[in-house]
Image 1 (spheres, rainbow, N blue to C red):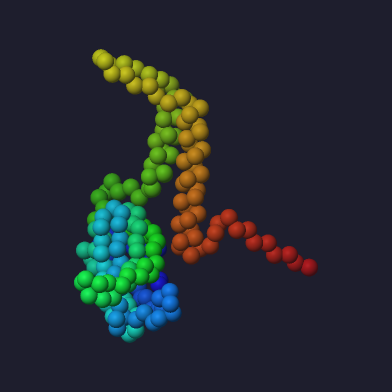
Image 2: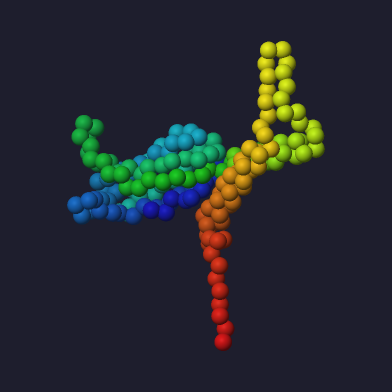
Length: 188
């Protein structure tokens, strides 16, 4: 199973699944079994794989993924009649569907939620330091109290770690290896 780690909205993608065996060692092929992918997340998508030799080929359509975001998926094998069905959970996982830039406006922001939150926290910290932020105020019967600088510093540190983890995961997913690995060569 070679399902992509990420897809792009309104683009096609295909992957193949080979024949397999069940928990008893029985052959599971496309001759008797149907493979269906269920995706849940930013939207709900169901894809039924086509027969490809003894295995299956799954293809997304342009209309399959129209909403960007994180999706959780399961690959389910089924066999039988509508009243009695054998089911095997072949695999499951998570993938990210990226926005197609041809649909984006000039104001498109590709940053993750953690990156957006980090930018907001840093802007709040700059406002406090420059004197442009008021700690609390009241208008009529409503009041607002802003976060303390110490709380913002803690939150900034947490968000920086989260952004670094996301970037590390993206680097690994792109096949560029773990950026935390350090390789040393000794010469004589």
